[in-house]
Length: 74
Image (cartoon, rainbow, N blue to C red; front, side):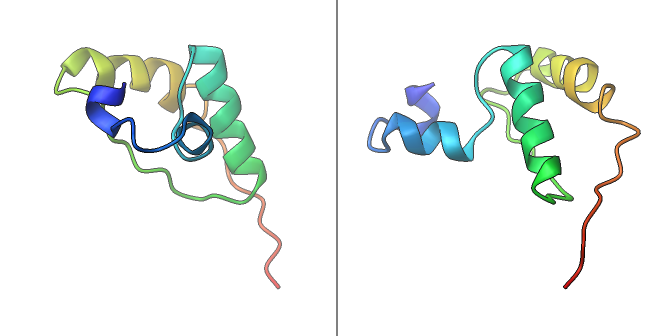
């Protein structure tokens, strides 16, 4: 991962900003962002491989396809 992100940023920062880890980790990260009111996520693959998009579609887009953020506007 550091080949893409660089090792100049501490791992704490990477974990806080990027969705990393197992499928379960990524799904928990997506849910946490939804719970916090995030309405849009930007996808940036680590490498230019179609397989990453396929995995993202299957394990992130499909499970969260029907989610509508519940924001309380102030």
